Amino acid sequence: MDGYEKNLLEFASLLHDIGRYRSDGNHHIESRNMILKSRELREILAPNDIKIIAWTTFFHRKKPNPLKYSDEEWNRIKSDRKIFDIIIRLASILRIADALDYSLSQIVENIDIKYMENRLVFQIHAKGDADIEVAKAYDKAELFKEIFNINIDFIQT
Image (cartoon, rainbow, N blue to C red; front, side, top):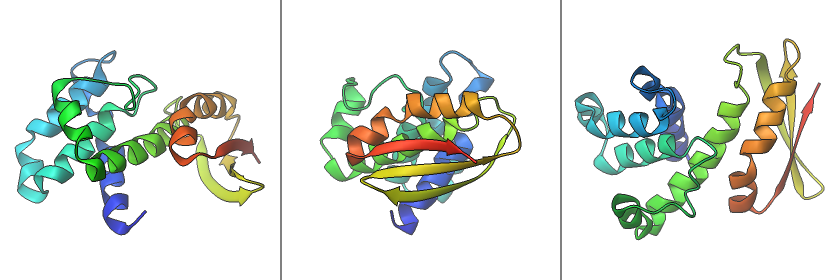
């Protein structure tokens, strides 16, 4: 991932739950819509960047699956393979990050990622029991595993 994509992921990670202001259960939809309509973001970001951030936030939840989702706007985005690929990669990473703060208590302090034996191992350094976060991370890692064709393990240290 280059610096451009890292910046987009940072924007998406900061904004992914902004829709909770309007709806907890559909916050991913509200987040996407708020980002797409934001005048402030239009002043500092290019239209495609806003689109990438908005749709990354939309797919940060386990459902809907961006590989199977279909609506008029998403189908247009899918036709631009470069933007589509960025969104699904970023969404797959954001899902894992979101899961690792599932309890919203910032229990996970640091993560070391190592490539070992054809899998990624996330070593979780937590200031307490992060069993819920690890369980959620396994659950939300499916898209990442599918896109990057790699197995993942989460280990608390």
